[in-house]
Image (cartoon, rainbow, N blue to C red):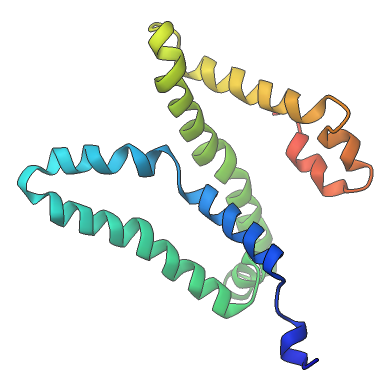
Length: 164
């Protein structure tokens, strides 16, 4: 087998990575926001759709292609540009901000608007965030197939079950 063929990912690995990338970018914002944007744009809906498509789809694709062409991690790229110490700080801040600042509020606001607010109109959004976060953490840390049980053989899974 040639050396280039040995470095390729298997079909299963590509499928898992593709599904993770897709699920990370396709969410309620991609289902609900474009029609609202089009309705708000009125007769200029086509230009709004083109702008949204370019920024939301093409922009992300170009960013992934640029990072994959570098064949380096975020830490390696930021350390090369910013220096090793600041690169570590910058990368750590980026990773810590992604979940609590971008992903969790987006997921909880969708849960709140679609399920909680319909039945409990005065229930605060922050409470939905707290309850959904704690219940998700509890689900991942209890039971026979819990993250904690799996963490004995996979220490990095502890990151997913860390209580917030």
